[in-house]
Length: 365
Image (cartoon, rainbow, N blue to C red; front, side, top):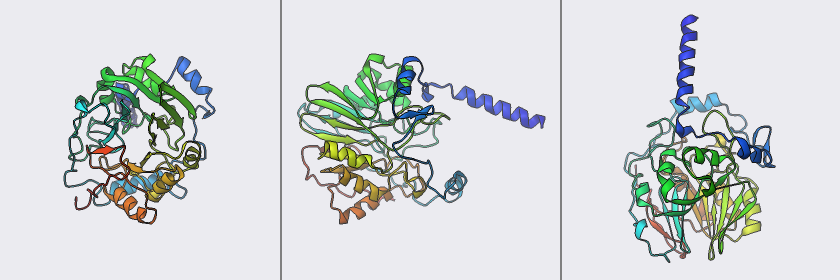
């Protein structure tokens, strides 16, 4: 019994010390916390989704999920081959070139109407606070922070490690003008050295006038947050970014819900909807969309084109790495929504709704 108690005490102390690392961020305090408490979406000490959102689907348990993850891993979760990519010179783009470049998973760069935008950047090669525990697939780390120009607007959809990467963000401080994020996320960013006057923290259903003709509408998502053992102590967002010429929906992570139709009704039609499609499972369908729901969400949003992301870089679910793109492409044969499916680094022309993309994942093991 004494040995067991000593072991537990040492383990607890080790975990406590490890979690003091900067990568875990910092919980909101003071005025930031008081503002969070005034949010209509903050109840019982945490943020809530619009509708009841269990972490696991009814009929499933964490025990079953853990057992499957440890002992019933599907073949092909991690590709054997290297993921293809190309290198677009982002530092020397013409000011009038309107493009999007995807870095894998949910990270991407946009230049639109002269503004440079970066979303959920992860360049450390890892999607976990434990180095090496969730490594990026071979070939997906083609870009680094050094390849990026100065960023006008950095969007952080929520504070999970595969969207708010500590190592990447501290390198971005010197080249980022403004960060747009949900309530509470600014606590992490200030802890990491970002200036408070460069952080714009918002609740759902707010509007930000960034510049003449550039507006951001902060919109709901159906997900959760947290970098330690506490969940939902910061707010997760989606965004509707409106430039002088385009409306682009930045979806972040979200399960399917009524908010897509509400956003489409209010802001549609939308030129491009960037929606998560990957790391899903029927066991957690409320917080990550299944491929058929991705297409329905695009339809709800009245999107002219849909860009399925959240795949092809990290294995965070038990499906084959290529399944998200394979499934959404197959299902789309009956809906015929123009899909944007570039390889990593390929330039997507934001002014060409008819741009064609190869099914690059076919044949890669």
